[in-house]
Each structure stands twice: as structure tokens, then as C-alpha cells.
Image 1 (cartoon, rainbow, N blue to C red):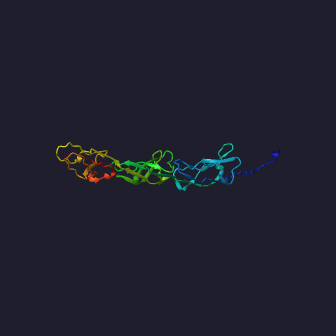
Image 2 (tube, rainbow, N blue to C red):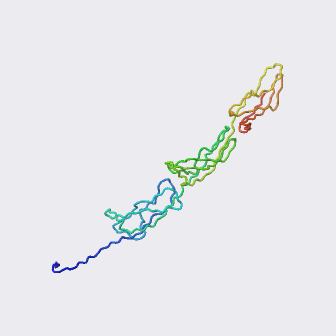
Image 3 (cartoon, one colour):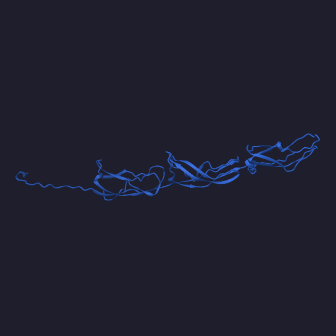
Length: 276
């Protein structure tokens, strides 16, 4: 060492500059279907699409972009990444990162529903759908339920009509409306009203000969299983006016009315016996 033999009048210092390493990363794209939960595109490889990491470093997801609601135009996948050194230290700031964002499309969940097919025995009341059923093995997302449902189609008299779902609400497990996330395919159901069976009795009349003429009094006839509020009227087809011993047959008609004398006889099923 001969440094002491020199008179050093000036020292000029140099600089060492380490620039950031430039890389381009790409977030994933995917088409998903709404499931009522947060969804993202998981990425573990093929992240860096331009440039290279330092040999000592690795890249991994820092924060995923997560989405719930259906959006068919697609969300920008703004997932972020972090870079760590082999010693465990965070070195993300040593990189100049350019992001190429992918697109996440979430499609609406499809369900197919219809009013439940129902059948009632005529009871003089209006009937409309009261419940809903799935078809083709479709279902709501876990935890979701139907809210308010309105139907089209009501029937009172014997026959069959088509029924429809007019409006439907779907709620998540917190009671929030999520109907917008479903593609609801509605099909028709039907409601049938069948005839009400009734029995007519006490149409056979027995008298002991007393020399006077006997006629038929329909007031003694009885009806079982008629709707209580309905009125009825028996009308003789052929009249009887006899005084001698013997058996005399007669026939009659029956008409049943509801309020305001509306004829509802066709809603009943019965056999008119011959009286004697």
C-alpha cells in the first residue's frame, strides 16, 4: 500500500443506479354463471406476459377482483399481484408493472317454473294457483327463496283453465331481492274443477188408502252434500193424482241456484231417481 506517498487533492464520487424492472401482467378472463356468491378467476401461472421476473423473485395474487351480480357485458378484472424475494421480503416496488385487464362475464342463472297443477271439487268459490314448481331439474341458488308471486287465471265452475305466473320475486338469504340475476322461464299450468257429487233421497212416498186423492209433495225430497248456501228446486215432469191402491211412478227435474238465482246445476253430479 503506497497511498501515503500520494497527495490526494480531490475525490470524485460515482453513483450506482438500479432501475425498476418492467413487466406486463395479465389478469384472467372467464364466463361464469351467477351462483349467489362472490366469484373470481383464480390465477397461479401464466401471469407475466411481457418481461421477466428476477431469478430470485416470484409473483402471486395479492387481491382478487370478486363479483356477485350477473353482468353479461363483463366486469374489468382488476386483480392485483405482489412480488416476493426468496428471502420472503416484499419487492413489488422494484417493478414497474403494466396491467392488461381481463373480462369476467357473469351470466344469469336460469330457472324454469310453472304454477302447480291443481284440482278441486266444486265448492262455489274461485280458485287460482297457490304454489309454484320447478321443471327440468332447475332450482334457485343455495339459500335463495321466492318472495311475492302473482298469478293469472282463476276458475269457479267445473272445467279446466290454463294458469300463468305473472310476476315473481326472488330473495337471498338476507331477504334482499336478487330477481335481476335470474333468467326466469315461465311455463303454463292448469287448474281443474270437478263436479260435486250429491245424493237425492226420500223420493218414494207411501200412503195408506183413505179414499182421498194423493199428489207428490217435493218438499219431502232431500239432498246430501250440497253446498249449504245454494238453493234448489224440484220440478215434477209428470204429475200424480191418484186415490186407489197401487204404485205410480213419477219423474222430476232438479235445478240448483247460487246467489241471485244463478243456475249452477251443471257443477253438480247426480242421478235423478224415479219416484213412486
